[in-house]
Length: 176
Image (cartoon, rainbow, N blue to C red; front, side, top):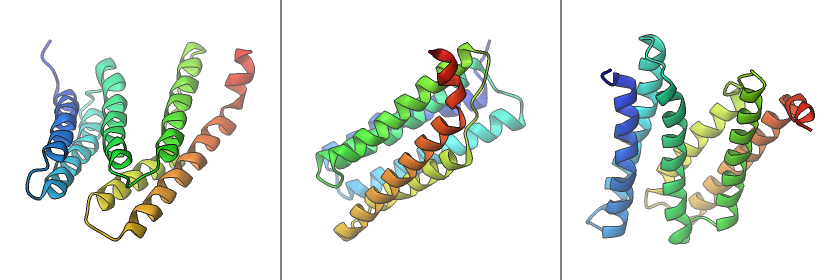
């Protein structure tokens, strides 16, 4: 069966991740701007593939698995770079990682019980805020911008994670 457009966009986003990092590591002229362009294009493919999948009924198991994985890999690639170059403390990345693993685990337990945990409003705000902050952090702005962006990412991540677990506490209670 041929691959649909939404899944092709997801694969394109996955391919953009090493390109994003390669530009930064090779330190080509205007590396941050090239990386920003790649990150922005990859982020746009996320919006497009979701729209296409829903609008044209192209939702597949592959897409359900790969789309969120591609999103997380893209964001983690950027944040790992920021930690490496001193723009973000490692503890901030750890908070993001713990939230992502925790929510993914919660969704797996829910799925095992026949429930689906859809993305909540706070999760969408967290994702949008993180994408905007990553873009800002790729620009040559004063260091205070990095600190503000890190704070925004951490606070929206914690709020979203707490909300997911509070709204779905019954799933964990049943799992005991």
